[in-house]
Amino acid sequence: MDRLEFFARAVEADPDQARAHFGYAVELDRAGRFEDAVTEYRRYLELSSDEGNAWQRLGVALAALERRDEAADAFLAGIDAAVAHGHHGMADDLRDLLEAL
Image 1 (tube, rainbow, N blue to C red):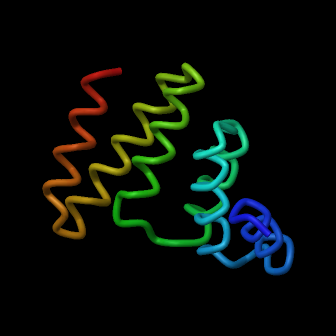
Image 2: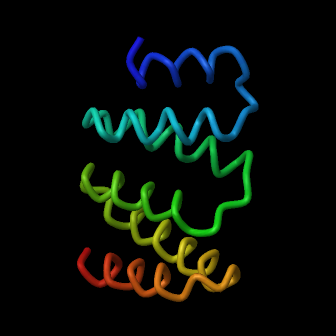
């Protein structure tokens, strides 16, 4: 079983398990399935408090889909989350991504 299938099964087995949604989103992203990845990142963010990483990944996936306004919103949320958790380097990376849109 590959990682994509593993996380798909994990999400199916426990739809409220945030980490399963995050892992599935990452694998979908790696497979170039950005629309599906966006759905899974959003579900993860509904279930869990994120420190910025998932917001960044969501923004990058949205940018790949040319949904720039939504990507900008994700990057802004990620900046707020990163700063709130003391991850100033991540916040700077998110600002760079926002400027590059």
